[in-house]
Image (cartoon, rainbow, N blue to C red):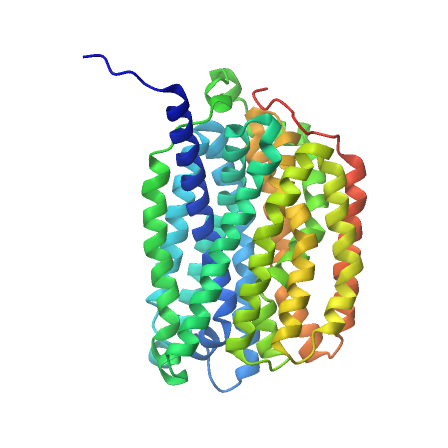
Length: 429
């Protein structure tokens, strides 16, 4: 008996697999990083010495930054795998490694039981996660961009930050729920471990989902000679595009990590806003962000990428100081300031995965994006929370950090002039 396959149904099934497989893995990766920022006060109290709480928080944030050091290596390793072996393989390995890092943190002994070895185990876990995340974003955004219809690539690209923000939102919600359900003693004793163990389990599920995906047509259509071509000469040949990735990323990564990831934690530690209320304010801000992403993505498919990128960079720069001045000592102020900033941040975040993929040819698309992007995020995004905390609470010069953030946004806005309009580009070449 011959089975008749409905082409439209097969296409919808493939699209669903692509969205779920890419989205859930990306969400798990971002969830891992978000819960570290959210649970910084508890990690500091359990895996570092309690003799100096302020120093413990700074040390925990320093390890947050150190985790970014591994990103460029992850970008190169998983980028090489993505361009040589396949996008699917690279994505699957990356999420598996991230799951391992979460498990290490979830079961780490306390400072009270093994001393500085607890801090060292945290450092190793963060380096593992940094390696994984350095490969996750370029692999997943390359895969998604190549699978998307070219006339809707801007809209499809929004899945990267949408799924990532869902991961952040889940981590933030989990933090808020645990903060309400458990006493401070229970949170310090074992409650803070729950999010990391959940992350490890979700990562395993994402690994299984990604192992069932199909490879992209763009990668499969490449000749064997192109896949075996040396990587470094191609990177050098496309150094202009690599520099453009850095320029477009530098402002976005700093402003996103400050307002989209660590704002609730900063409000708790520096501004003394109630932890539970700050977490709920973070939930509001991230919901607004998720709602704004597809709007900007669809707009870029209609009017072009460059106009949307300018709107994001310039809008964020203009609103940063007013929203910083608004945020003083109340959770509603945090919710409003995060929401306003994330609307503008969403403009760039929505479409940069598509823009990055459209800048490079197929043979170097993953590593070409992964290396410069990871270096930029490591140098600027990873250090932003520490720099903000240090300048604000230690040196009492918060405005200096704000000037720094706005200047980097201006750099990103200027780099938009250097890129071609890539809307609708064919990615099979």
